[in-house]
Image 1 (cartoon, one colour):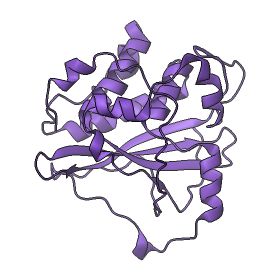
Image 2 (cartoon, rainbow, N blue to C red):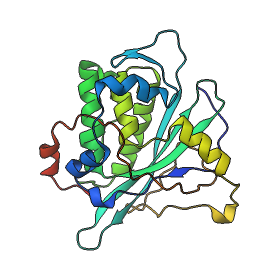
Image 3 (tube, one colour):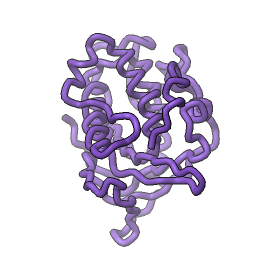
Amino acid sequence: ESMAPLRNYMVVRKAPVGASSVAQLSLRIGRMGVNGVVSYLQRFGFVAQAAYVWQEGVKQPQVRLALDAHRKYGSDTPHTWYVLLGQIIASDASSTAQWQVERRLSHMRALMHHCVKEDLSNEYNSYFESSHFAYRGGPAGSSARLAAWLEALSKTINVKALSPFLVASLLNFLEAPTQEQTAEQTRESKPITSLQKQTVGQTLENEPVAPVLEQTARQTLEESEAIHAGSVNATGIKQYEEEEEE
């Protein structure tokens, strides 16, 4: 597996606290159109022949997803948001895009887990047999289950088991930075000392979560207010919205 050197910065997306429901987040990030999949993936270095066909004989970038921690937002009805870390390592290992994004468990269940199961169909268990998604309600142990599931998802993406359409949808859902955004951040960033490192609060379960991704320092990049072009099909939104999840 490619091990590109890490940069000393990380793109940090602000938690979309105003989009706490699945429906609100789906509206905010938009839907991925089939016709735009190939060009959208090219912005991250992926090469697809069509929306549901990968280009053969081409080395693709490697994706790593991990759970860092979780914390609550909101005064009246606080919700738990999970801090996710991501990397996209260029196919030639020449660069690595790193970012942080925050999502609720209900977001990930409806717009990641549900869609991955639908895309893989009968093959889902062969990739996630020992990595089960977190239970509804966020009981103790949810962090460990989610971390294991994200690691399995990364491997599934990297072996091209998921369709280009779903990979594009997942990258959009996670607000992954494009190659252009990464290059711009590299030019504008200055080294950050250890005293300036951004930290994340201790998990509410008081259980340490060891990040899969090695971290050095992070520098906040203000997220764009423009809605991204695309996201996963939000099938089953009502089903998940009826169940309050922390």
